[in-house]
Length: 59
Image (cartoon, rainbow, N blue to C red; front, side, top):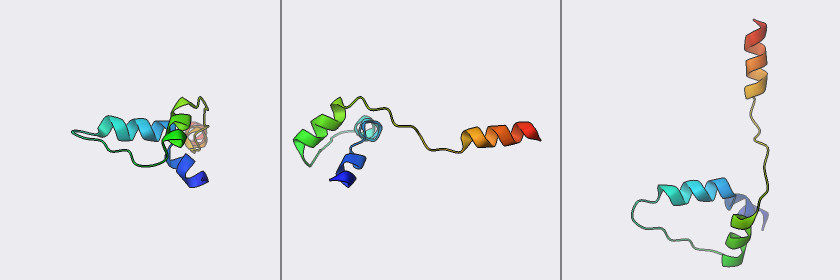
């Protein structure tokens, strides 16, 4: 399931797990979870920061 894979993106997992204070329950497909954690895929972040810096330097 594409939506499940997106929710199991490594950075999101790390954030969710690291913010747990007392307990953490992970419910779902164990093999999908393990696959996504092991994935070494780099995603390019989609921001407009580069354009904003360029525009501010032009002024």
